[in-house]
Image (cartoon, rainbow, N blue to C red; front, side, top):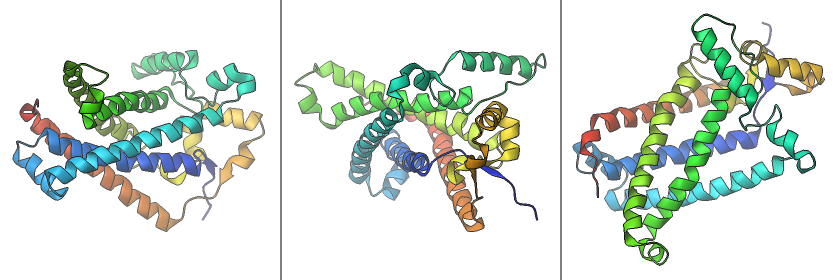
Length: 276
């Protein structure tokens, strides 16, 4: 049987960051919801599974601190990826995750194509929705971190901010958390798993690679650039083993299922959200 050619897309460190984010985000979503919906039977059962109310909140606080360290490490890593001698091209080049004019053009082409009055955009290494995915998470982290630390150490925070600001911090922390959970469990899950071109799973972040056929369909501009730069052959990698595929399919769908479970119950019990 002919083996499918695969092209490297993500490094081991990229995939480690993603795995770290999956585990910490799901933990924070579960423990945060256990607090938010505590008056409900579902909230109480969630607390019991997590070791009780106090234990659940302790997990939430310290996993939050772990996420802050992860965010700092990731930011430092990003700084090492910048070509400081060619700063502008590094920030807005074809390998950058920073949105640019081409992304706006692709978005417009995508809208026209959706209504049948144009051809689909020829995506590069990063599609505009992938960039939005990335920055939606990145910009939300500082807000959650600052408000979370203020609520974790309210007496210390009160030395620098008035008491009413802590009430604002509660609202901001919850609003951003609910927004992040809704986005990840609806939009990101759909894009990553349920789109016709991704179903049953976009394996790239788990395997670190994508097939040449997928690349031709989804990222033709990136494929053309690799060919022109003579980098296509060096970008080829071996496919993941069958055992590894089984492991990440089980893990991926377990994470998806747990996220959807939290989302559905969060919507069902939304009218019982506590305000204190």
